[in-house]
Amino acid sequence: MNQILPRFLAASIAAVLIAGCSSTPTEQDETRGWSAEKLYAQAKAEQADKNYEASNKLLEKLEARYPYGRHAQQAMLESAYNHYKDQEPLLALSAIDRFIKQYPAHPSMDYALYLRGLVHFNEAQGFLSWMAKQDMSERDPQAARDSFESFKQLVTRFPESRYVGDAEARMGYLIGALANYELHVAKYYYKRGAYLAAANRGKYLIETYTNTKQVEPALGMMVRAYDKLGLNELRDDTKRILTQNYPNSSVLDSDFLEDRAWWAPW
Figure 1 (cartoon, helix red, strand yellow):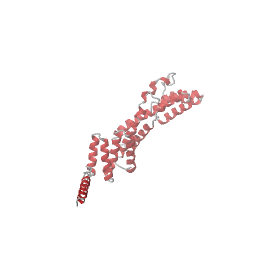
Figure 2 (tube, rainbow, N blue to C red):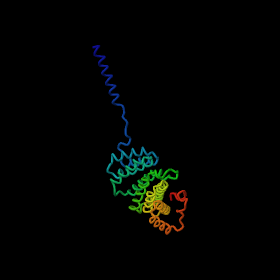
Figure 3 (cartoon, one colour):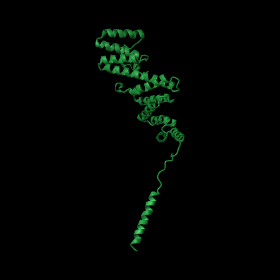
Figure 4 (cartoon, rainbow, N blue to C red):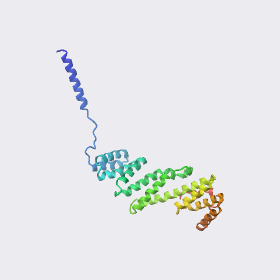
């Protein structure tokens, strides 16, 4: 009997411990049972408070629980915006591209294109800050080109969109910067004796960015490069075009390549 009692007590204690462990409260998801509307509204509230990570967690739950509702579609764009504001461009672009692919006829497609343009525009800031006197020939303008293309799609497809005005202003800024990039690269080649490359870069600028102020110095660059190459006919034809369109031009002056006024972005 004395041996049975300790065993009984041990078993009883073990049972109490097991029961105590099993009754430990687990972490509860406070959003359990929330409607799509409530999840979306709370995500927007977190977004307004600049709590972008918290907002995205709510949007993820919204998409997982209500994948076919209208709020789930909008959640993709809100998530993209959160990533954009939280300086996570790759995640932002991934969300935008997923939205565009899945919902090509969505009423918010103009905003999706605008937001994609903004993300690329933000990524292009390193390129656009060329006035820090870094070597433009080593800069990558792809983000600026992608930004321009997104804004162009917006303006072309949705001319009545409320985002068009800002998109057009940014496009003007970008096209000037891209033309200036080509001019800098042409100058880079010319100063290193790569005259054919300099002439071709000037030609590309003129054909691609026809209405920019960089056309005039690009023509001057081509005249100089053709002269160095001994291509006199091309030199004279280009010079004739230059003088016809810019009769008071000074781009053929001796100090042209060193005059920073010609290398201003726009």
